Image 1 (cartoon, rainbow, N blue to C red):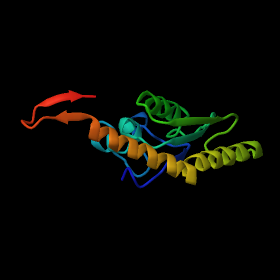
Image 2: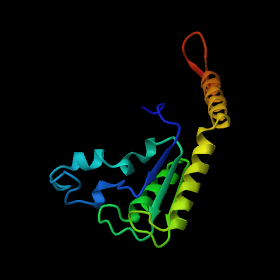
Image 3: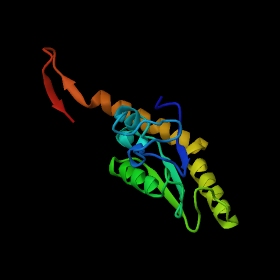
Image 4: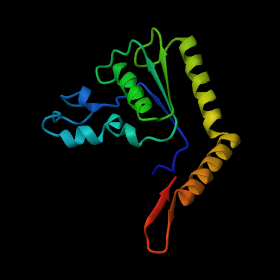
Length: 154
């Protein structure tokens, strides 16, 4: 449902299940026993299809074996490499859960700023204008003559 969300905020996530090949949560099969499950449960594998802005927040010292900070770093790189609007915030001296007052306040400020930027009335108007421009460009993108031959593509 690509039009369901305007943006996303993800914290201390496991975005690539192939990095946890011997099971995760209630999945007891290994990556080699159930590769389709691991791939389908990994947003990393679908980074090329993510078009909405995403804010990733992760503790630099995450000790949870399934959500090591490399999960966010690699997912961020995959998103940016595929042209997505993404921001990565790493919280120093934090593990899986944010505990330090400064880190909690930093997290709240980052989320508030990000949501204001992407969920405000101005953001909705920018999105509408971009969608209208894309639709207009698609209409003008190719000219077809009566016989159905492609004359030009802009």
